[in-house]
Amino acid sequence: MRDFIDDVKIKAILEKSRNPDKQEIRAIMEKSRKKIRLEPEETAKLIQVEDEELLEEMYALAGEIKQSVYGNRVVFFAPLYIGNKCINNCLYCGFRRDNTSVERKTLTMNELEEEVLTLERQGQKRLILVYGEHPDYDADFMCETIRKVYETKTGPGEIRRVNINAAPLEVEGYKKLHEVGIGTFQIFQETYHHETYAKLHPAGDMKSDYQWRLYGLDRAAEGGIDDLGIGALFGLYDWRFEVMGLLYHTIHLEEKFGVGPHTISFPRIEPAIDTPFNQELKYRVSDKDFKKIITVLRLSVPYTGMILTAREPAPIRNELIPVGVTQLDAGSRIAIGGYKQSEIGQIPEKEQFQLGDMRSLDEVIAKVAELGFIPSFCTAGYRCGRTGEHFMAFAKPGTVHSFCIPNAILTFKEYLLDYASEETLKAGNKLIAENLKRIGEENPKQREIIESRLIMVEEGIRDVFI
Ligand code: SAM
Ligand code: SF4
Image 1: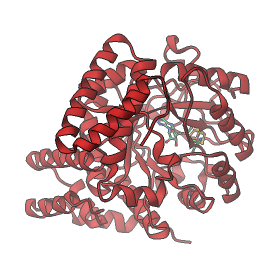
Image 2: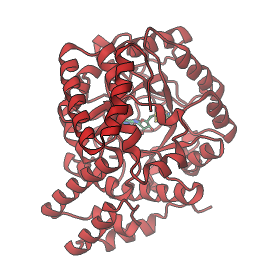
Image 3: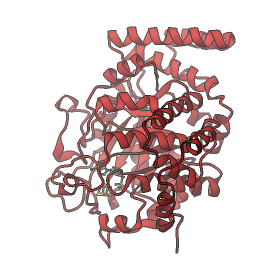
C-alpha cells in the first residue's frame, strides 16, 4: 500500500524550489498573511530561502500571524512520564529496550498521585502524560492513570486537561481514552523519510511499522479524539524533508477529517544516557535552521498550535516564542518520579534524554510575561467543545481574541494569586493592567466583562472562564 508521503516527489519539489525568486516568495507570504494554508510547492520555496533580508521578513510575518490567530498569549503545560518500560529499540532514545543503563520504572498509583500533587502545588493545570511502548501500558492502564490525575486535587490545585503522548493504539483503545476525557493525542512520526525510518526502528519491533504509526492519528480521530498532535524528531534526517512531511500530514488530516492537526511539535534530538547514536548526527539542526523550521511551519499552517519544549535551552526558547510558538512546557522533569525530587534536577539514568531548560515554572512565567506574552493555563476550549473542527471554525474568523485572551488573563490571575513569587506577581499584575488598557481602547465592553470576572477570581472563585 502506498501512503501519502511520496519521498521521490518531496525531493523533486525541494530540488525544483532551489534559489527562489524574491517576488515569488513575497507573493507566497501574502497568502500566509491571509492565513491560508500553503501548498507543498509554496512551502518548499520558503524552505529554500537563504536571503537574509527575506528571512527577516518571514520571521516578522510569522510573529504577526501568531499574534493575529492566537493573540499575545502562550499556553503552559508540563510533561509527566508514567513509565519507561519499552519493547522497541529506537536508536536515538534512552528508553530503548537494549539500554541497560536505564532504570526501568512505572509509577504506582500512589506515586502518580504524589507527582500530580507536586505539579499542582507549582500551579500546573495541563499535563501531557508520556509512556514507553509496552504491554503494561495498554489503553486500560492509560485510562486508570488519566482518571487518577483528574481526581487528584489539593486546595485550588487541579489538573483540568490531560493530553497523551504514547504509541499508536487501535480504534477501540482511543475510544476508551475519549470516554475518560483527554485533550490532544500526540504521535510524532519521528522521521517521514521511509528509508531512514526503517534504519532507526529495527525490523520486527512494533515501531518498525511506518504506516501503523503514520495512520495512528487517523485511528484516533475514528475513535472520537478531536485534537491530534503531529510532530517530527529533528536531526534524524534532512529537516527540509521533515517540514514537507509535516505539511503533507496536515493536508492528509484536513482532507480526510475536515480539520488539520491541533498542534505541531518539532523536537530536536537531545543526548541520552548510553545512546551513542545521538553523538554523531549527520543531520543535526543548527539554531539558525531551527528558527527557519518554526517560521516556515507558522507561515504554512497558520491555524495550528506550535509546541516548543524544554528540550531547548532557555535563550533559544526566549528568542523563538515571538516567531509563532503557542505552547511551552515549564518546570519540566522527565525522570520517572522526577517531580518529587525536583531539586535534584536531571537524573540521566531515569530519563529518555536530557532537557535544556531546567528553570522553574515561576521563572519561565516571569520571563514570558517580561517578553509581553500572557501566560495562559486556559483549558476552556476543550471543555466548551472548542476542539477539533469546532476550534478551527472558531479560530478562523479571529474570534479567538474574544475568548482566549480573556481566559488567558483569568487563568494567569489565578496563577498569580495562588502560586506566584512576589516578583512574578508584580510583573504579572502589570502585564494584566497593560492588556486591560489595550483591550479597553479597542472594545470597552470586553474590558468590563473581563474585569467583572477578575473580581470573581480575586474573591476566591476558581476556574472562571468565558
Ligand atoms: N514511546 C512512545 C512513542 O515512541 O511513540 C511515546 C513517546 S516517546 C516517550 C516521546 C517522544 O520523545 C518520541 O516520539 C520522540 O520523538 C522523542 N524522543 C525520543 N528520543 C529523544 C531524544 N533523544 N531527544 C529528543 N526527543 C526524543
Ligand atoms: Fe520506546 Fe518511544 Fe523510546 Fe522508541 S521513542 S524506544 S518507542 S519510548
